[in-house]
Image (cartoon, rainbow, N blue to C red; front, side):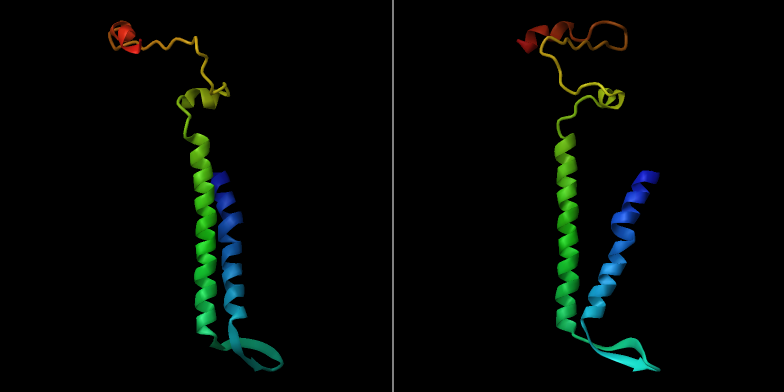
Length: 117
């Protein structure tokens, strides 16, 4: 959880407000000024602001979608999460036998041997 919060902070929570603030500032047409300092924006180019804000938001949505699809591709074929956490290979050997034991201790695959053939 701590690593996830750090990654979200580094990739989103810190840079995104700075990026959108810069976008807003670049669409300003008239800056108010006083005492030799740049003040607040008095007039924005609304059309340019709209396209830049929506375009940037869409761009970041597609980047997020790309990372989501990449993660989905990486975990799509994982069948045994226990082996993954133990560091074992995820590839199954062809001669490996899977044994399922029922609650009463008997082999649950006993009647299924003919179904597999």
